Image 1: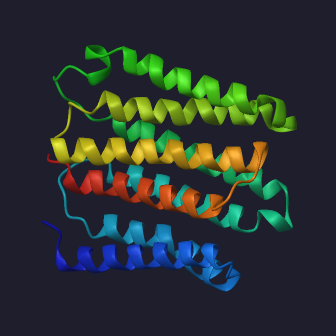
Image 2: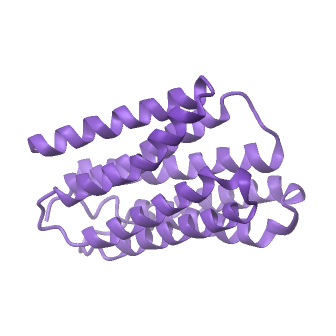
Length: 224
């Protein structure tokens, strides 16, 4: 059960997410620029105030820190094209820390991927299909996007790998978080490289906020 301080921070995060998404929806740059930089710090505070014997908190907090840096770079990418690359690198590092966290989870239980190897094929097929679809539109970013797609699909596979190695609640949150991250980044890539679509910003932020919250919630729900 969450402590009162955790409930307050969770409420603050949800309020900030709502403010940010509303800012995007009504095209209020002031609201968007106010709320977005505070989203990840709220989750960092939520993790900080989570008292748990589960190892790996520092890995998740470091990953969140790089997400925060990535958010800031992407927030100002219109003023400097290199900021998109910097943001991409920051989120790449985030996923590496999340992957490391998942792989450090130890259990004698057989992994979901070993029981159902078709899941590996499905995730790899999705990543390859997305890159194949976007490839003609990537320009000089072909290699970075391919690397990023490989890493984020690896992160999703890692969440599937530990699905049976943690308690049910944590497993579901981890999987929802990883899947939401893949969806968010896929929408961002399609909107940026292929063709802008209606409500892209809203959908991207909605899935991004869900992804980060679910992964943090997975840690909170994880039993030692």
